[in-house]
Structure formats: structure tokens, C-alpha cells
Image (cartoon, rainbow, N blue to C red):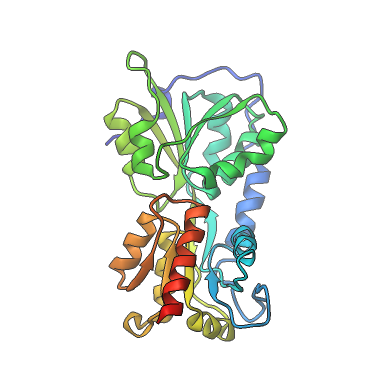
Length: 303
């Protein structure tokens, strides 16, 4: 599939002058993340809701596990935070502000919370142009809550698919059959081509920008890691987090506890990597993820 070039998409005049060669806000945010890659070292202080042995290990990037921890605390479940991934700047991040300032798209497709966060920084730096956004699910949509509450009229969350997967989004995104329809897809370097290929097959003109990437954490505090090994459930929200966990435990066959995945895509990777007790919801998202964690804990308690 050939991606659409900048010149082949419609441009729209903007009342805002082109921003400086990349927005300082976006660089500051992502570069600070990059500098901490692999920094989960002896200085890392784990987050746990109590001094008792943790039941669930939460593995998202540091600072982004609180919502899950709070939800599990309501069920009396103690958590240990062990970040397994970090986000870093992608090769196309410099272009995002300029493109948002100078071009108009029928849709902006956002498929992860991190993609949403990076997009919001660029959108604000570009002068908050009018955009219509399609999100993959409720978790991604939540990134835009503060903007929507501020009654910002230029940002419209206009679509979410019937099932929170990229494949379904690509098959259901609304399109006028008699009209040229353009899509901007800011994504992770590691995201598959499923969305742009699915949209292109339906006649959309897609511009993908790899605005960020996910980097595995390779070194963790050994005391924290030993606690994580003994926890009944490890909760993972991406294929990268699964890969990082497998790298850390080395001998997959010797680890018998459970992995609770946020969705089917992550679960599929977990199974391919040799993990045995894999749980995931039918519908991806925080609520379903919590349900899978609880199911995994119940199964553990029956053993």
C-alpha cells in the first residue's frame, strides 16, 4: 500500500502562522520520556496499596497506572507498580505540528492513549485547528476528557467502533461513498499496518505519521522484580509489555502465574511467546481488563 504524499492531500489555509521547527512543548514532553528509558533502577520506588504481598503487578509506563490501581483497590486488591515500557519520540514527531497547521483532514484516527496525548500537544501548538476524531475505544477517548469539558468547539470526538480494535475501526469509520475522504493517522512506530491498509481498501486516503515509539525496560530493581514474580497476576496493556516481561523472566516454562491482557491482540502475543495462563476481555478497555484480572485471581485462588 502506498501512503499518500503531503502534496496529494488537500491543504487548507490557516489563520495561524506555521509553528517553529517543531513545537517545544512536544519535544520537551517526549524527550524527557526518552531520557529515562531503562531507568527503572534501584532508585525506583514501587507503588503498592499496602505493605502486604501484592496480588497484581501493573506494568504501564510510570505514572500511568494510577487509574487501574485505584479501580483494583476498590476490590481490596493490592498492586505493585513495575513499569515495563517507556515511550520515546518517533521519527515523524517533528512533522505533526506543521501538518496540523497547514492541512485539513476529514478524520484524525487515534488508537491509543499515548497517541492521543502526543496528538493533543501538537494540536494545541498548532493553534487548536478544527479536527474530527475517531477513537478506537473508551480508554483512548478518555485522553480528550479535559479538552471536551473545556467546551473547545474545534475538537470533535465523532466516532468509536462497535468493538475497540483497529480492524473494526478501519471497517466502520464513516465515509461518504461519493466523496474523497482523507485520514491522518498518528501512530506508534510499532503499530501494524492493519488500520491504514483497512482504510485504504475502502477508498480512504491515509497519511500515517509515526509520532512515538515504545521502548522496553530491560533493567529493574531485583527486590521489586522478586515480588512481581510471586504475584498471582501480571496486568499488561500492550504487546511490548508482554515482550518485556518474557525477557525479564527468561524461563517462561518455569513461571506458572497468570497474565491479564487489556485485549485480544496483546493476549495473542502473550500466547505466542509461551505464556500459559492468559486472560483477556471480549471487548478491550479498562472495565473489561479489570474483569479479566478478577477472573485470573479467582482461578488462582481455586488452585
